[in-house]
Image (cartoon, rainbow over the protein chains, first blue to last red):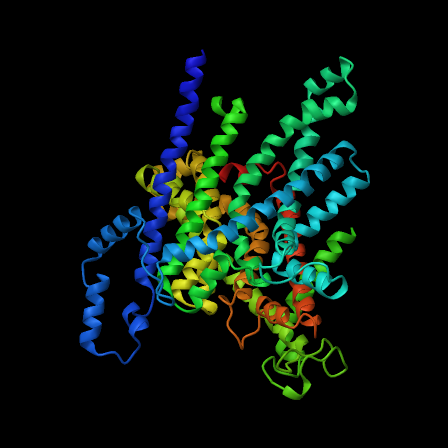
Length: 314
Length: 271
């Protein structure tokens, strides 16, 4: 039986992992063709409109743009497999170096926002579910309803107004001073908290009325203990999934938050690159975003199967 | 019920102000007056002026008009493409269906805004690329819903009867399948309107959507962020407009979904 279970888990994991690669391949192909389909000639962007024709031909050859599309596609995939992403047209540095500078900043911001959202959502949602109709429930309803419609590009300026004008406690721009991560994480994390509060509240509310909780109460456990030990544990499983799957939205939401707070991360890099038509950097950043999101989604699925045996048998 | 009244009031104001904007705003959204920069509300400018001395009320109305147009066009395109692809793939089955499922899986695995930013980065900016990018991210959900509906509808007697009497593919798709899932698709479109509007505002905020001098709420908010200390109303007014309209659309979508599909089954199954 033990062995059989192991086989089933790995089959589920294998199926998920096998889906990961075609998805990644589909994405790489999409970016490749978008890159080729864009209006405007990359050689002209690099050399300017007045370059000599001979120089253009030379450049076109150096970039490999004079070869058949299928060969270019093969080269592109081979290049990615060996980690060659090209050089930035603006700074001349390798794209991988640019990404390595910016990515940790974005990851830091995303993790702080996620942590903050969970710290707000789990206690509040649990308190709301324990006493439906009570003051905590009203607070949770208000936060989830308002936060759902409050985009971070409006929440951000509101936070800056509050913390720069009324109470100048926290730095509102850049990433150099201590505490400068607080406001960007709030702007990015609170809309997510609004979503999570709703899920925690529903999930805890459903579990709290299950028979095993009543059985625990009948055995004489105090209400708080039965709630914490039995209901909450099961109720938080769907929350883990939703939080994991939302991580992608948090990372890409960071593009907007970084612009508001001038946070030097991947979002700022990609926006600068788009404005400057620095296509190798755009391509590298988009691929890095996508690979991160796909990896976190895969990790969430596998983790969920690991902590909830019911998934494996479904 | 006061909540419903509020929703109707907000959406009504949005529709009215964007349809009638050219009639009752005497001032153009683009007329500059550098001597009247960053002013607060006054009789001449009920909502004040922006960094170039343009009337904020006029820009707010025109911005709402642009958003309304972009959201409507994107949803319409996404619905057409999504229902056509979804119905055809669910009805035909086989390789066609597997291909569609794979494509939609790839697209659903990515956050929508990333796909939209990628498209805009390569295709360029402006109204048409924006509509294209928004509908390219939004059609996937409709395709999945239409596909799952087609899978069950193709087994029904009336579809089989129509096939037996010699109907071709277009007749089956448009005469039998589409009318039967149009209601659910419309409900999902209403629920999706808020997220399309948010995406439009977000992309314009990033400078990738609507391009100046054409006004949009996202672009106004982005400009307002540069003058937060001198003239906070420049950020607060368009921000509040986005918040209220998105809230109203969200609430409308939820209520429609609750009355058409009370258990949320059809839509949950499709995604």
